Length: 256
Ligand SMILES: [Zn+2]
Image (cartoon, rainbow, N blue to C red; front, side, top):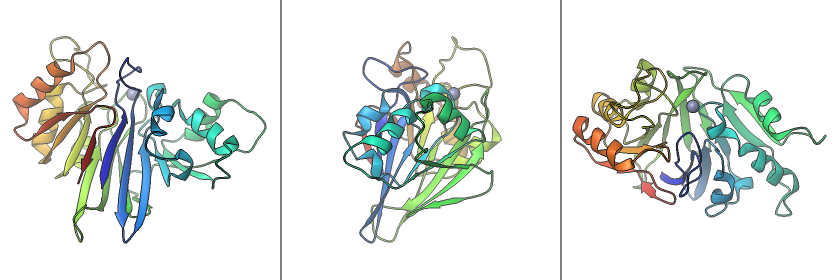
């Protein structure tokens, strides 16, 4: 599996990055499966650097906050009207209410929606090409899911696990999703000593605790807002997790 950061700015888009969006690709016997995790503000244009978005096998939405979903409207226009089409209907997975949310964002131009939306069901795995995705409900002010994704490793015959926390504070769901993950892509929007409210986001320290407690092999910190210094958040994480800690950046890749 290969993870590419398309956008990693937290809460709002930033001067150097679009909002949340990650391209995950896996090859199995010559067939490539490509999905995106979230499609936040500014991410559609950046996604064009890496793939024709119309050829994705699916869009996996962790939750329906604007900074994670608004560029579904751009994808909808691409699927309907780009001369590089026609494209097959696009499978989209998200919490209950995803169809209504996407329609609200895009508006109604009278044409049929190109999306085929399915709701995450806790405990129900979804198979997309060579990837298996298991959603875990997590702790955020709106229904939100961490995604545990299992797929073929880069080395033939191996299987790897990538866990994306979505937006969450520490909770049982995100711990279970991250259990033994080869790569834990964890949000770290909050800063210790500054952001005291609980039940919304991780800090760098809490992301490190999650990685340690779940036995993750590598921690990649993301969803850091423009008003936060990423080095501060990374330093926090290094106090609670002794494994490798990376910062997400646009275009950065990890092969599993
Ligand atoms: Zn959120």
